[in-house]
Length: 114
Length: 110
Image (cartoon, rainbow over all chains, first blue to last red; front, side, top):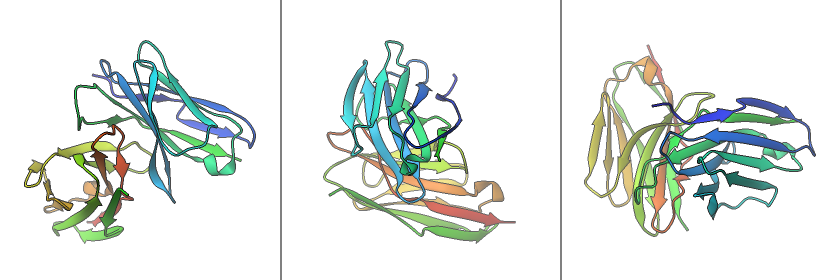
């Protein structure tokens, strides 16, 4: 079974631009979560989507948004990019069978904001 | 406030020298504790899930244990290919997201 895939793998943008990242979950997985990883803050939760609805949101500004499609694929968007948005953005999926279920991560998208 | 603390931050071992990584947590209610391995430039790779105190899980040279306050990842006779950052995460009651520690960077020297 194919794992979580993320595109693109690398991105370079300039301040003020916007960016869209894509995530395809493992087949059959209906929940998709997004995390930001930086050397200073580690892995931090951005938001979770299930059945095309945002179910949970972390402590990030409104410039960070996302959506989920009917096939469970998800996108996240960052508008008005800042230097501090440079990070590895990780997507994780799970089946949504119950509490404490394992999340499986994709390879990430490395975003560099200049 | 929920907290996850991993120690040490970095660990250097000789090949074959066994050791343990620690993950201590303070949470309102634990749904599950997860261990992941992350290689540079890659996404975290799932290792173990532990749900209740006293639970243990093993995989090759790795063994994870859980108490009411902490979890240990024991590495027996490590090899250079075990070099990676090991991440501990908790899922708390009422939430679906994972709350991560900052990781332990393990280097195994041949």
